[in-house]
Image (cartoon, rainbow, N blue to C red; front, side, top):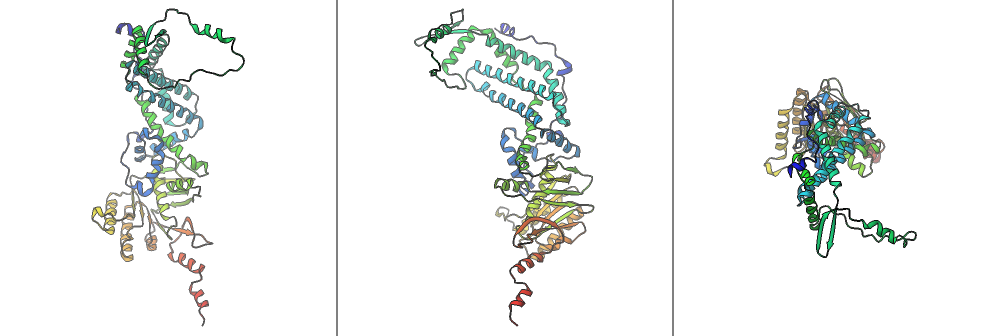
Amino acid sequence: MDAAASSTLPPAREVDRGLDKAIPFESILGEGASVHTAEQPDCFHDLGLDQIVEAVVSPWKDYDLAGFFHASLSSEDAIVYRQEVMRDLEQPDIMAVVRGFTDRLVGMRQQLPLATKSYNERERNRWHLGAVQRYGEAITTLSQELTSLLLRSRGLRRWREYIERYSQSSSFTRLMEQAAWLERDLAAITYTVTIEGADVSVRRYADEPDYTAEIEQTFAKFRRGAVKDYLAKLPVTVGLNHIEAQVLDCVARLNPEVFGALSIFRQEHQVFVDPQVERFDREIHFYIGWLDFIAPFKRAGLAFDYPDVSNATKDIEVHSGFDLALGRRLLGEQQSIVCNDFNLHGEERMIVVTGPNQGGKTTFARMFGQLHWLACIGCSVPAAQAQLFLFDRMFSHFEREEDIRNLRGKLHDDLVRMHHILAQTTPRSIVVINEIFSSTTLEDALYLGDEVLKRLAQLDAITVCVTFLDELASFSPSVVSMVAAIDPVDPTARSFRLERRPADGLAHALAIAEKYHVTGDWLKKRIPP
């Protein structure tokens, strides 16, 4: 049977060494492709990045994408490489081709389980053949469609070159020829089924008359105009029932060469998906997921920018940036999203944020961290324009509730966590601090906060510190003071905008006192002499 079966397949040809030799292709993710960190960085929860990543990857759970968002890149070129691919995919024609390719591969993967789970071997072999054909269609169509596209990114241009060579390689063309031969031979099989009571017989077709045409002709005279269709609608199910399986077994015994070849085909091509194709299919969803996530923001008129990211300068400038995690919630509630500007130039390294509670200070700190992290994995960032710093590590220290499991008081826990951060911080690190040492006295909090910020200033680390201590906003020339502004008309209302100006905690209190006529001047007027 084996010899007869193999004769139905195209003969193996001499391998085309020029094509089947390893075809180099740099991952569509570039430098960071091999970096897939399953563990979420410590700063993610504080900065709201965990919410962002979960929203991005949740529609694509089968691709295990979260790890790509957990690992920042270490070079400017690696960031630009991803930005180039992201820009290309923003073009509708390019995105349509890529989505079409990935959708075809989804169809292929839906057939593969059927090729292993069916209890009937011949059915499993047929599902496997169908998956191979879907795979071939995906590769061939992609190669044809990429030809006419104007691709600017290095990643997609190299992918086009790879897929063109792969689609013409002898291994792929032989796979598709064999699949086409089998499909042709299977389609050519004819047989007759005779049912007599409970007996079902399957025989070779021997030019028996086809009564379909004769029956239709006989009853045609009764047809007058549109008539009701009495044809039974049989349910479409996946998999054979026991009767169908027995019929198939009989057909296979009548055609051993074809079904034998089908079995050999599956054995020879049990794994047929090219590893680079499989890798591309997964990694390209890093870009697709991000662009799908930010699409509602862009439709709402919010800007996203591909930032200039550099480790050669610590100058930072952002226009109209916003907290993406908060923005997602506000967008869902159809509320407006407030944007802010900030910058660091020259010797400036630290932003100390003060102002009234609920004024947007913590939101600003989260935004600062989000912008830098997203920029350093090659994504566009929520801002109209951005120039950001290429960091080595990012740390956050946000106020936490006391944890009884570690048997430490809140102040002790703050000190331990901050010591751990300072021990790892380098001049290329970013540190985001939010309201620490609030559990101790004002005097102690001022002393400890001053010591921490001085240590960070000595390390020359980029720092954002949200604090209720105005004194920390002016301890060094490297410090920039930003203040959460209030509504000039109603001092009790928050504008959620931050202004670059000296801290003055009394200004807010005086404005409220003035509104309710309880300042010294007003009190003097109200108290009779």
